[in-house]
Length: 305
Image 1 (cartoon, one colour):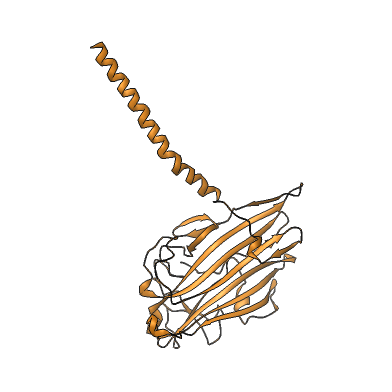
Image 2: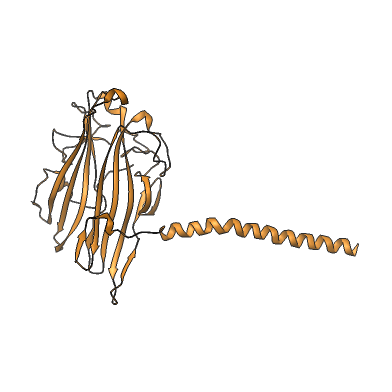
């Protein structure tokens, strides 16, 4: 999956450049609300034949982005840094990270009668196509058919892994694994999904769940379908969420998935489903109808003869 950029926050580098709790820039600032880290240290490595994997970590960052053109209402979001370390540089390519996602990005507004209107208008690249950003079931989070996170059809599965100075994730000093191998066998990737914010006409909400897993690379197929989530058993997984759902009564965002609306299939998919159901039926009726006409003409010819 191509990840040359981290969402649409053009200055989000400030967030991962030191994790400042009030990092001011010339045009706004990023405020880190909280940070947490999940660590897997391969306690039973022989069972998974992964003793050269020293650790796998997922650092979660909850943040606010304050833009200069909207000093009152920030953009809310949650992002992660996924990192793993092996005992040798060559062993880095023996592993691959695959991320799974579930949920929707949607817009909401309150009309004059007090009714809350919700709709899905955002699209997301997924397995070579752009589709509505709403997944009722778990899918592989990838832009192309290779499930490995940050893979690229042209550069391969590991080229876009990043490495940096110890403890740093600064975009200005990071290097790509495929361009230059690190001295210390540590690589990382980041994910900053869609943010939530209030506008003059409505609200952009996010209700997304993620499951970030590390596998032995040989167990991850080169091609898959987005629904093929059980292709292999992972070494370990970490769950995290990016949930900001606006409560108009409280005039604030809620971070509980219980507040998420129960979505039906997105409109585009629903229309396709109806076509898929009715088209064979129409074709069958057409065959019956034309067969009836043919038999009637055949009988008429036999009667006249």
